[in-house]
Amino acid sequence: MSPIVSIPITIVPMTPEEYKGKEKRLTISYSFFTVPTGSFLVASTTKGVCFMMPGDMKWNPVETLKKHFPKAHFRCQKVAIHKTVAQLLRNRPVKDKELVLHIYGTPFQLAVWTDLLQIPSGKVTTYLNIAQRIGNPKAARPVGQAVGSNPVMCLIPCHRVICSNGKLGGFRWGVERKIKFLNKEARSSHKIKNVSNWEPTLF
Image (tube, rainbow, N blue to C red):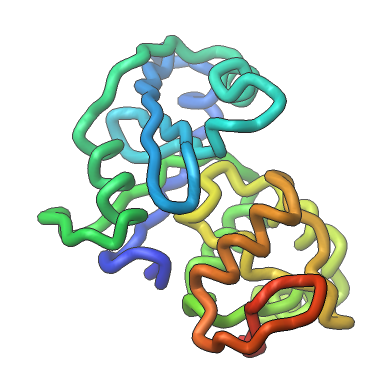
């Protein structure tokens, strides 16, 4: 269950056959929405949300989506699950009992992303801690790569991972955006000079 939303999140791994379009060409619907933390592109298959990124990046979000799924067919249309995501990120109640993510990744990436779903809002963890929790304590660097490859930002809270030395570390969508997300989720109003007002609690 992802603490960023009020309903459980379930990951349904996308098979290589689905991703590569070997059995049937994957159809992906995408749309844009705006919430207090910014504009986002959200995309989904018939099984669940498969991709999400900021809508205000320097590189084109739609082109990025299409590069992520080179064998898929795309439709620019808003479907019900997109509205659910928008409502959840606006902190509004929804009727759905769960949110399904239909995402493609290696077994290692999926293990990391599943662990990320356990990080409570207002807390952070480290790459090393994740590596230890998934049973591969020497894989902190590969964990960082998996975190950076998260295809559904916010829904899988990759922004809640920092370095073991307490530094913020990188963020695929920009460190300023990472700080913005942490600020919004912070449980403390303590102000850190020249950084922001978030005070993380290690998970």
